[in-house]
Image (tube, rainbow, N blue to C red):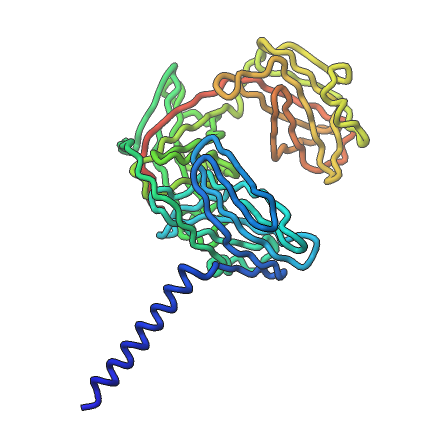
Length: 406
């Protein structure tokens, strides 16, 4: 006969616990502690083109963006001279969307405190909620990232555009150059292709497989160099770190990062470049480029200090003495005037490099700005360099497809 009162008491306790949990979730600030003691507190979230954050300890901060952007404002409290470094990853509720690009700007907020504005251009806009995971850059255990996250809410977006995906495989051709997209998959491992479900968010990637033909014959001297992707909500992704590998008749590109796989379709634009088979009118070989240690970086832009120059197509190419960097790597700088009409028609690349003994040197990276191209060569004790440069045409193809889960 006393069972009903007991049941009522238990129910009341459960309802009170739920009420407390709801109160803590909605009203108490979300906090994260980094291994070095830095404390992070979710302070505010703003969405749109005009962002304002006001605090009694800092002046009113205003940020204007050209497109609708999500700004997450985080208060950092630290004991040293500066807060601990951390990386930010975005996830949708299903854990499928992952973006590793974010702009962080910090504002002083008194002794031992900053306000960090994390500006997000790509995020799962339809959901109205995302998981913002924080990974300390010096964290020894990346699996802990799942425990360090903020839940961020914002106005959900429902665009009117309806993108219909093409069925794979899909082909685009022109001027004897044919590209077939045979596969587009998300959730692959960037480091181990056979691992279809990487837990580490820094290892998430997208795979695109292409079959390339020239005049009806499989072409092995062309590779995808860059992929851009869009979705109907306004997200735009450019392939950052990527890997290229050959798989039978196909070129496979594995790249970071993708968009939301829940979208009906992605618009994918891929750029393809040749790796060999250049004509004489596309190449320029310069022998004996000196490697200097104490060169003034400013003089590298002065035509008077150029080591050699030539005409290639409609451009004048100038190569400058190579600089040995503090890392031991060697930087080769070339100026192209006028610059190739990037990125649509021409592409400038280092086709080959060797030291004075004929030992080949690899170039792990290329950067450019305006008319200046810089190629970093792996560490070497080279005194001079012989380099061959190529100014070549490129090809672009576009598809509208839905990615599949690997």
